[in-house]
Image (cartoon, rainbow, N blue to C red; front, side, top):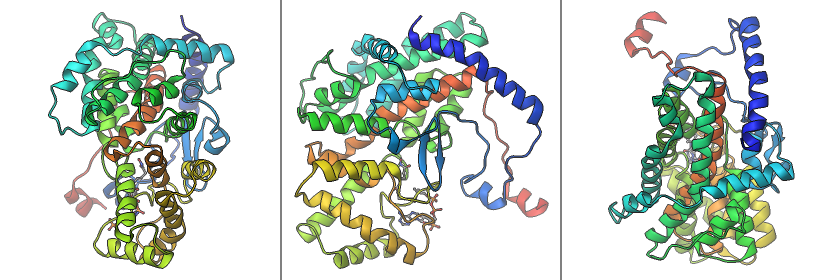
Length: 422
Ligand code: HAX
């Protein structure tokens, strides 16, 4: 057994006991009411899911297992994974053990490359990633054990195994997709001496500097989780609740992440910033920038990277990226525009009067940093987001099965029902 499996085997009975007690003591208490507006408008604010890996407070942003995200920006993605899954930061031994487990899986099976090479040459990198992940169902230990009649209490173990396999192999697959899509046809081999994110940065082959590796570590830890109700996590959790293979469930979530109102916003964001740079032939004044934003809003388009369904403050993950940029990036028009947008957009959105949250979200700054280090193909950016988010989603699926959360099935009502019954 790995150290991670051991830790979880010790903790899960306590979590199960605690949930059982809550259900018997408070099972019938009401935690949320649903207005007609909430039912029609994306269930915003309805408390109807359990998620222990992280929570998002409107005023403070992301908190991973009691650690506000800005307090842990120095830790590695592997440490975040351990934290998400177990509630504890790993000891040195636990970290080394987890890193070794991930390394066991870092070489993709051959069929992955055959599947990817057979896809149309203009496939979006997110489509390629999703297809590659879903094709790994053939290697799902959960499916194999399920078909042999494994007991329910062991589901989480096989799902964890699939999750570690997937997280281990993803850097190679994601870097391979980057090399294919940018016509840099040779794939770069793993460097077994590097950590998970450092190795990924190395395999991209765009920048060998330590700063770029640092950026990747930060990027891949910051995007790891955002509680259970966002489109990608919720979609994956719903699919996984039917006991579909984790590979298919995660593919479903990433298909949601590929939407421009969710993860794809990071590509839209950089596109927007580059449009500004090209339009003004450099960095515009704040007045020019405000006018540019107004034009876009008046054309019925959103300002990418601003607004959020839950947050009502600048996203601390945006702050973490800005802090990185201020430290490492000097004299760069693209980053300068991102800084100016932070001054200009919130008052514009307030005056515009629609967005409930005028502040930047996680996607507003990250693209400018990637661009600076030479990762310029912005339609690839959501793949980076995915690589990180898989850690949170895997953790949530493992915990949900350990807690025996049943198949998801909320009730829908018709518009006639609303007319006649409310
Ligand atoms: N620019 C212009 N209008 C905006 C806006 C923005 N950045 N943010 C919200 N609005 C508008 C909405 O489109 C909506 O308009 P309608 O009433 O005409 O439909 C209105 O303000 C109310 O929306 P809201 O309640 O404040 O926001 P939602 O919860 O509906 O949507 C979104 C949240 C993130 C989707 C939204 O703010 C948006 O579209 N932002 C731009 C895209 C973006 O940055 N997405 C990334 C979010 C972070 C993330 O999940 N990354 O993965």
